[in-house]
Length: 178
Ligand code: MG
Image (cartoon, rainbow, N blue to C red):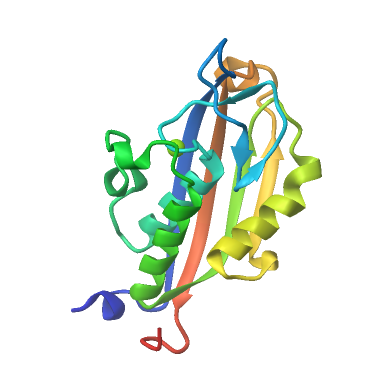
């Protein structure tokens, strides 16, 4: 059974990511705060090997999970110097290519971002549109919700950002015509 015929009908995928938030250099190791490929002004930023975009990482893992592929950490190891400061758009685009190669297309994705600061409401539309652009799907197929952690634990204390994502795939209508 080849990859395409292994995935017929619908497939669901789940992704999760967390990055520590730290002050920017020289006081800490926080990178510029980037979420869904959109840079947002904030006194702290995510710590990570790549650009540390937790939202794009969670979506990438949801896409890979839906087609039963290895997760983002296996495809793009954080021990590989080639991925140092890498734009996470590269990761999500690779996942989208693998989805297409598996004969599937994205129906919709729904993500929940949990962080205390910054407030994401003003950036929500820009983030949705950028994710849709990266995946070549309508913005209406991308939903991003934001919550706080009510001030408790590391996320609530502003020391981490957390993202959950689910994605639904369906068999491509013109499967094979990539
Ligand atoms: Mg990550």
